[in-house]
Amino acid sequence: MKNTIWLVSVAVCLAWQLESQILHVPESYNSINEAISSASHGDTILVNQGVYFENISFEGKNIVLTSYYLYTRDFEDIQHTVINGSLAENPDTASCVMFYSGEDSTAVLEGFTITQGTGTKWVDPQFPSYTWRSGGGIFIFQSSPTVINNLIINNDVSDESEVDGASGGGICTYGGNPFICNNLVWKNTARYGAGVVIDYSGCTFKNNLVAWNIGGSAYGGGGFWMIGNGAAPILLENNTIVNNEAVENGLGGAMYLWSTQLTVRNNIIWGNIQSAGGQIYMRSGAFADVTYSDVEGGMEGDGNIDVDPLFNDSIFMLKLDSPCIDKGNPDTEFNDPEDPANPGFARWPGLGTIRNDMGAYGGQGCLNLGIDLVGVYERPANGELNQFNVQLSPNPFSNKLILSYQLDEPARVSITFFDNNGRRTGDLSFDHKQKGSFLIDLTTIVNKAQQWQPGIYYCNIAIGDDCFINKLIKNR
Image 1 (cartoon, rainbow, N blue to C red):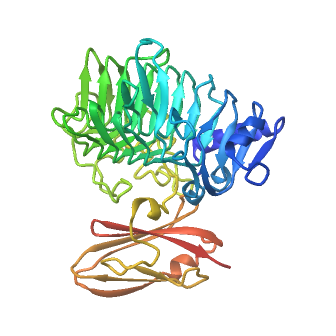
Image 2: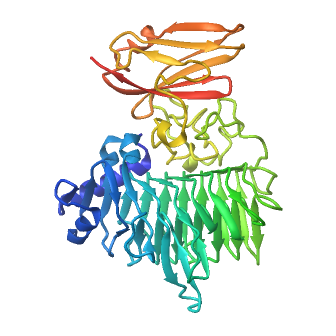
Image 3: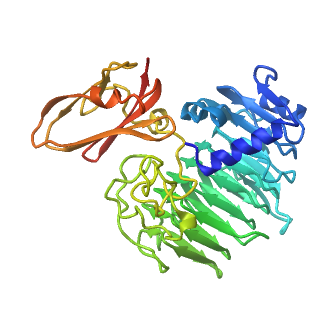
């Protein structure tokens, strides 16, 4: 999707290329670290698909480190370009990616799966008698990088040996002001702040999906744990924060805030679990200015609601009748991108009109890493057997495409097609009143020449409350 964030990252990359170089991994350099050591400010390191068992440090260099996702916008380049931090030579620097030498916003990390990191040991500058281990996936210390379009998954910071605490399974930032946008922070664990820790730091955190992170047994915080503030403000905008858990006696399944002031707008905060109290726990004068957000259990603030967001699928996209559609901040600066083929209406993954949708799929940077997420989210698709026997054939196809499925009971069925840039190319819906087996000829839809050029497409099939996503290839 050519959203604002993509255009910014591409523009930065192309501008730098005029006076810098592109370093290719593994074609020219055997490892990412080797390429970083050879790089200079403004260079781009372009990493091909593969699993890289490394613990990356940017070494104070303001460079772009990216997979081919920067160019292809294909989620497979994220899913299959992996930085795996599980084989760290030094257990004290075992984060997958580290920024600790004053890198600024032109240091960019984009387009990777970041996994199996266990954190970095660091001395607290404000309280030097304390030492922490933090940031399993990404550790940011007194730096302000740009972190966009990554899958940060299955990192664990639970080792408290020789430290006073273990935090930030997915991300930890201390003392900087990073820009973190359009990432999936998923299934990470830590003793506190399982998903994200913001520690005496500024941060702009937009259009991220923070889900299924589990921890908080030490100090709480399933999704987020925050303490204090840095020189810059903390902004959480258009994120979906769901199904995180603060275990044992942990508080703040979504957020644990300690003496922190922050702005929270246009978010969905739902289904998070804690031992007591609400999903957002505040202590020692903490204050969250929450507006235009769907918060389970309710929250005072302009435009806030407390209604089931009606998620459509396991990546928490919204159903067409979701109460979160067109309910974000109405100011035009927060509008969803407009669909050029349907003026006045949002471009997918936004829904409804161009007014902001609450959650990660709304706003200018709305999350669209790709919808071919089967391997990550363990969902049946691509012709695999499921309870509805959903199949699309042939695949690859040219001019003819047939959908088959089976219903054991009456159900509503909707079918939506998208191209590789997230643009709708066709849709159908049916209200079946009976059970049975069905064959749907989709040939008329896929023969619309202007919309269906050869390439990659995705078919989202919703049957009742279940959703299946199939990747298709159209030949000439």
